[in-house]
Image (cartoon, rainbow, N blue to C red; front, top):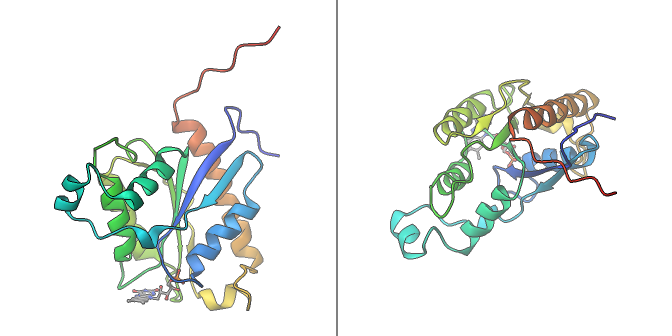
Length: 202
Ligand SMILES: Cc1cc2nc3c(=O)[nH]c(=O)nc-3n(C[C@H](O)[C@H](O)[C@H](O)COP(=O)(O)O)c2cc1C
């Protein structure tokens, strides 16, 4: 068992696709099942409710309407953010960029600044979201999130890797996912401020 000495690490996982049968959501669900002990992953399920970003809507609702506040609270309450992005036209999908634009706003609180983030992605193409992840990394850099530099995980040719029930069955991809999650646990340990340990009970 890997030891993450500071605490159980809560991770919110954001799939960049609204599709019910999304490979990216399935990848994150697999991640939640194979995560090392000490890391708890919850897959965010309400991205479809987040409206298109509009500064007037933001101003009229003091920082965003309820679905935006819900997303912000989920990210704020997590030690880390794990994103799985599809690739659309050699970049990240609009729904994911839109969510990050909302999250990047400073009011009512900055939720991405200094937040540890790991990224991955699945596509049906052979390049496995290389360009989408590159664009996502650039966007996250602008938000001052702390994006884990390595390892990178590009999952291509999705139809070969998932079975009829949508479960990730490819052993090599499952192992790469395990390695990514282990590295993310260490990354969070490294970049999160240390929490004071509880006083000893005598
Ligand atoms: C509008 C659109 C553009 C796409 N462009 C690319 C692309 O540039 N590169 C690629 O590998 N796949 C591309 N795809 C395929 C998606 O990556 C693939 O459908 C993927 O499974 C979507 O993720 P999801 O299963 O999580 O919904 C595109 C799909 C759509 C709908």
